[in-house]
Image (cartoon, rainbow, N blue to C red):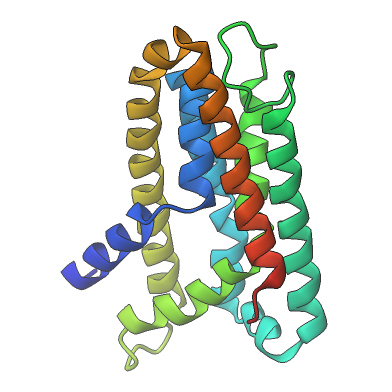
Length: 203
């Protein structure tokens, strides 16, 4: 494992995306324990993309427009659904001190689906992992699985940090209803924007 791999992975993970946004929202709305569940779910959602890229299935997205478009629109629809849930009073991401409790399992499941329904994640791994594997290896698969595992571990740790910071700010926001409303609308708008951008994006 090279230093370049660690640095590149950290840059990719730190960039704000749907997983980061989701973890921050949960940290603000549900606290630190829920944000850990969100981080775990988002991390687990990387598994299908990592496996698909390692065994070569992600190449389907390069050759089959139908496969890519199907997963893309499913992912976009789910992001829009999440935006709608944020705006609902009983939504899983409702940033409200008195909101209806959402189980840790459901919180983690939502995070998993966000990443599972992201076809570009498979394409990312397909292009990302081979750059850090010795082409002279007889069997590079164990190395790729190892690197994918390191990437997932880093993802989990960074997301827990994001969620922890959001949870620390929770009391400040909860005591200010006007700010809470603004935050909820901002998260809903961000998820809606990401969903529309994914739906309208090319390969």
